Amino acid sequence: MSINTRRPSEESKIPVSDIERSPTAHRAKIVSDEKPSTIQPNNQIPNPQNGQSSKEGVVESQPIPLAGDQEDVPPEGGYGWVVAACLMGINATSWGVNTTYGVYSSYYLENNYFEGGSTMKYAWVGGLSVATCLICGPLANAINRWLGFRITMLIGGGFIALGQCMAGICKTFGEFLFCQGILFGIGLGLTLIPGQPLLAHWFKKRLALASGIATAGSGLGGLILSNTTRVIIDKIDVKWALIINGLISLVVIVPSVLLLKGRHKAIGARQAPFEFKWVVHPGFIWVWSWAALTMMAYFIALYSLASFATNGLYLSQTQGAALQSILAAGQMIGRPLWGYFLDTQGRINLTIICYVICGLSTLVIWLPAKSFGVLIFYALVQGMTGGTIWSVSAPLVARVVGVKDLASALSIYWLILVIPALIGQPIAIALLNYSQTHLHKTGAEAYYISIGFCGGLALAALFLLYGAKRWIQGNWKPFVRT
Image (tube, rainbow, N blue to C red; front, top):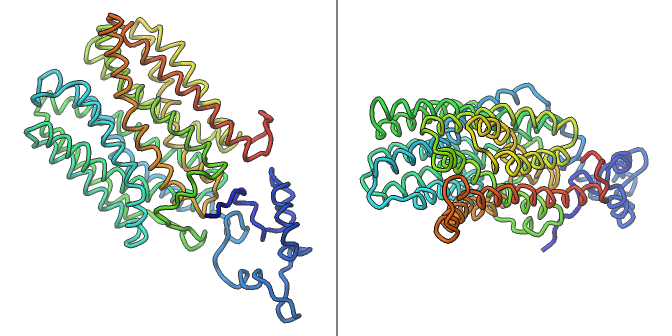
């Protein structure tokens, strides 16, 4: 099993001038020493008519560009902004809908809607939907190769609508677990996985900004739908809240998917469902390790903040729901904002800074919080930083493996994150239960271990990401733009 451990821009066939500009030029020069005939002065390819035959002569005649090659330059805009807007709409009615799960679970617990339902069981439903989404990575890529990304995403949109509508008519907890956890999760996976690499077809310098705009849709959808869902539940019924949200998802996702376009042939994109070589890739291993810890911290904060407000500080359900809305607003603002800074100041550098803020704010603001006002401030900061993983994943992975292999690497990336997404919140609840039953803590103090665990994960993750920075630049210097 051979693994390409060089940066995508360091292919042996690129011009000497490009090698000299590379931050890891020493690696490329080693390759050039091994195959000196593949690099010619003045960027010339050997001419077969002059008695020189080489692979470069064949490559030049084929319209298949290499990652990092100058043959394909992303438009840096144009129709790419339409793609970003469409992905924003898809995220708003898929992941935005997913954030409303806290509203449903709160209603179910308060009214004992399903017999045998408990806080832990409902936490597993929320984690199962995300885990099912991520485990669909190889399946989504396989269907993508067979039917194309549009058909794959339309199937996903159908599952999203079906899962919600069927959850509305469920009579038992087991039925609800299947519809909300599995059917809905499959829909999330079949829309997320094929759509995420598309922006890299249109952007390079502005890729993080475009990804931030697209993923801000989940914050926009969460902000709107979490409030409308509560109104529908109060005015009509929880059953119709699920059905209405399912229909909204279908109405928005279908036209958005039909308007999407890719540039697969131009960039030579590959769609390999199972390439486990990425798991041990020396640069990529740091990225997925960072993502595993970050994913756990994200879901702990997302699902525990409102519970801390209502059960820890004894605030009202309305105030708890308001915090969820503020957190969603933070996502809507923060993801494009961080995307802009990532593109201008270095993607890995700014991601590290982002999670320094995320981890410290959890320990310094959330942990000692005693009032609703402090929690409002934390919800805004957490929304702007904690969910950045969703907007920076594609740009970071592309930075390490290149655009050509992006879909293949992302497929394994999301597959690795299945377990962290599934166990994050249950671990937090287990720590909460331990604090209450064994340490006899009550109120806000019962949450201290879970909050500390959340902040510790975010801070530990940034050190892992620094390993990717070191691999790319070839040294440990902290102020090199990476």
